[in-house]
Image (cartoon, rainbow, N blue to C red; front, side, top):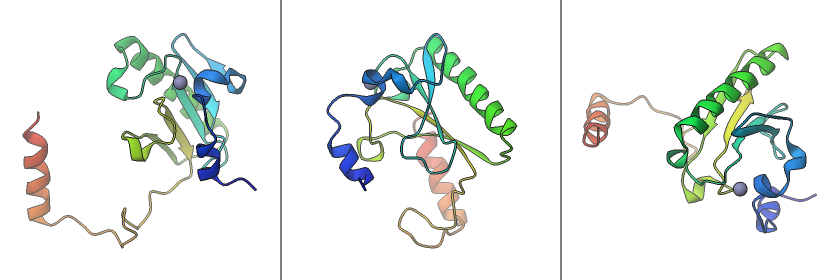
Length: 140
Ligand SMILES: [Zn+2]
């Protein structure tokens, strides 16, 4: 059985640009497809047709189109009986397997009780809250 990491090593061309056979539904600027390596059944992906790496490179028209598609995916998953749905987009070279930005719509995953390091998640202290706000506000 192929492992996900092996699958990634064998990718030579962008699978979202090269393999349009996977398209379930499309709009003007984006398409809806399934995750080949899902976190859960009915894990869907919304992919802009134009190959861009980051959310920040999308045009306003593409973003509007993707919003429409996310709502569409949400509606479909609700009709399938799911009540808990997560929308997710990941950024950064180490955090993305495929460098064509895509938006996940995933039913029934739980973000969970463990943090990034596998430790039990801790509530932010007052100091942590203040530092977070200060760090973010520097760039607003
Ligand atoms: Zn691509």
